[in-house]
Amino acid sequence: MPGFEGLGAVVGSAVRRIILIQLAVTIAMALLMLMYLNVAAAVSAFAGGAVGFLTSLVYAKKMFAPLGSEPKTIIMAHYRAEAYKLVFTILLFSLVFTQFKEVHVLPLFVAYIATLMVYWVALIFV
Image (cartoon, rainbow, N blue to C red; front, side, top):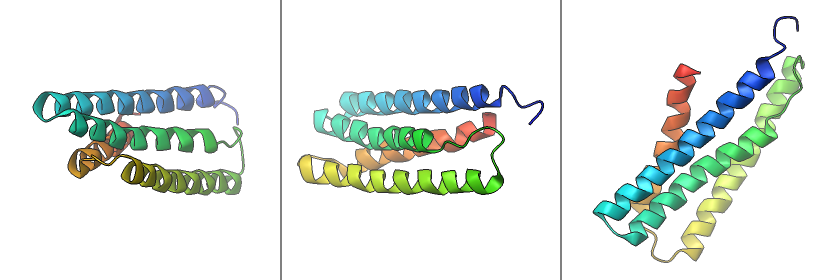
């Protein structure tokens, strides 16, 4: 498509920024939990945030359609990426709940939701 040659690089850098901001929010949430609660709460917050930013990374890696692709190709790539993200989210939360016996549920989900909010707020600015 004429006029859209640099679009792939722009989208790639925007996705990279969003995931890096999600990582920063995760670290900030973990540090806050460490300062005000305890180590288990901090680890729980980091685990929740990690589920958020790792699944975003999975989506970004799987959501590939060459520039100028037909709409059907793009939407199929989106569906495939969302399916991978959903499965990966379930697997990661299952792993946290089965392997981390001292998990603090509230910090876990607060950090996870915070990473999701980064994505939605970033869409306004990107």
